[in-house]
Image (cartoon, rainbow, N blue to C red; front, side):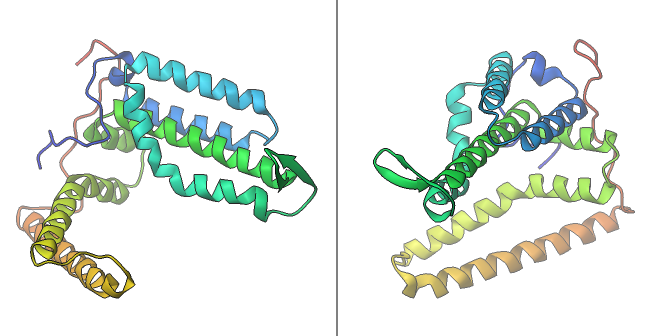
Length: 233
């Protein structure tokens, strides 16, 4: 759980993008996302250009395409919603592949898919090329409130601990012959989730008391700031 604790989204590498200062990458991501969001729905060429930019950045970062594509599954709910939009929206109708759909809904679905995919892909590139501790240091350099930085730091540190606890609880249930197959089993799963929440909350209390006992005053020790330029540090 020390400073060297990694994260599943990070891809170890030595590309120029890996070596770039974290706070500049955060600013670049923020600017890119704002630009994508502000782009009108029917500017199809612009979305193609944005995708080419991300492909170029991914090539420079040397992050394998399969590594990014597997993690794009996180946007599945947005994909499902986008597929429903052309059928649920009102307005003029048109025919696509033998199906009658709403023209405004079809355009809205394209914009949702395009903007969502571009934003998620850009975020994955940031996570893949930036270690969590460097990202936190970059946020500090951007003057993000200290409490928010600490919350994110604890979240990164303990997400694997909570995930492992959840895995052990699942194994314990299955070793007793329990498998959630239908809604009748949902109360058991809900009680397990409640127990996990209580355990995590109690762990947080113990960690906080231990930190206070060691002189914690509301600020964590300074994190290692990323290099200001490639080749330094």
